[in-house]
Length: 408
Image (cartoon, rainbow, N blue to C red; front, side, top):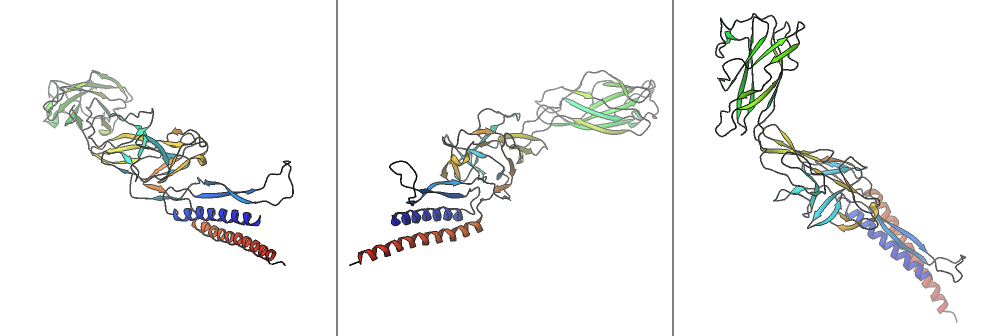
């Protein structure tokens, strides 16, 4: 029986050497998870089913399991590279087949999809033209490189301080003239955008009247809007804004051919004051912007892909999702750094990063192999000694049998 014991030991040691050799070979593979050979002893069943003092008949490989511990994270220069810090797997789609990986080395294919080195497409939540995510079933993610559509200006937030010490101007004596700075006290200017994204300069002028109110005049690209003031501001004795008349928006004529004209812009002077200090512009924020080209993007810890455009705006392009399993050790290895769901692993639990026990993403980084090369080399020496020891048991049994054969 020692031959069987030694032979089983040789087979087990050889399998252990295979596992260790695979770990060593993949010590530099991004996202690789080291394996461990687990063994069980073997005993012959007795006829009565009761235990006895029989020697075992060897060992066997119970299973080869992978250890899904966290690997070190290394920074890269590729903005599409991603590392999962914590639990979860990237969800990949290849010709309709779903697989999972920890390797976060990605690039763009010719159609703009985010793919791994073997062509599998990274999945997540896609965004529409307005940047709204579709949080239904995950689908392949792509980077939309089309221009960001312009947005027409509809609102203007203006927070000013008008100098209460200014001498009033009587309109009957000195009519307003936008080209004569002696007919108004102060002015501001801001860029606004028509429906085609063309920029116009909208300028407002402030004139203090004998009544104490301030009239507001406006011009667009050097042309006065309306024949008189577009609004009038009144203040309390403490300098706070009391009334704004009229409340209607300023109708700004578009100067570009084909654009919607006029386009109304609602001014909000909330917070404007009249104190005894010099005129100041604390805030002048119009909405709207011109069209823009995609200049770059970044991926946040929550997986949101945010595009940056040449007009200074940003827009959501999609969101990466992660998947986790009740028993990751039950996943079926497919090679190419990928695993498949199995009955042992349980169904995939899909969610966004940093939710439901899923890890966070780190962009421009990858997760290294979790193989401890020093420990594996020590294990290699130990496995080699075990192999040699089992070979010695076979050699010893052979010597015993040879002695029996030589008996006279």
